[in-house]
Image (cartoon, rainbow, N blue to C red; front, side):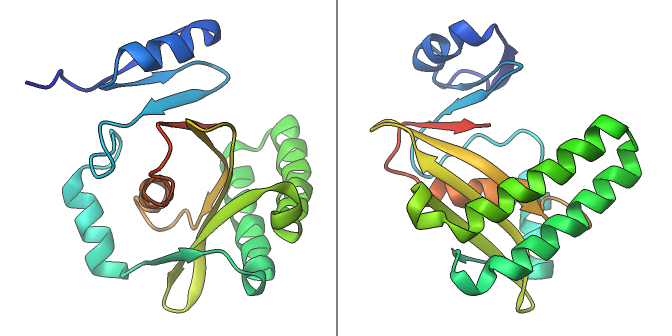
Length: 178
């Protein structure tokens, strides 16, 4: 029988070891999270119950696909909307600086996917980009999810895009969520 799934907070230095020895747990630290797969179809998901995920899919019919050049400007607009909503909520000078700085990182990444060795997916709803995620191959066992931006008004979309990106990265043993 499977162990009960859970979340464990641990020091960064122990994350990789524990990820290898506790396959039914997400290992999280203050600097990163490493998720070990149960198998290709059974991804760990703690924050959105399956019923909510089903509702999201039925209501919005999100389409997941590889990100393309035509998605760059809509993705950057989505980032601006995302950042604006986050800034309204957090309203902290340092966070505002980080959000503005992150815009330039997003822009650089989107315009240079191939050169930077990044892979990406886009989520379309009603023909509009409502989410995107970018990541890269760290080594033969680990894929890193670097950026994940979604329309914050769509409940569960962040978890949906993460699940879809993990499915597209199924040949990796570990997913490192930055």
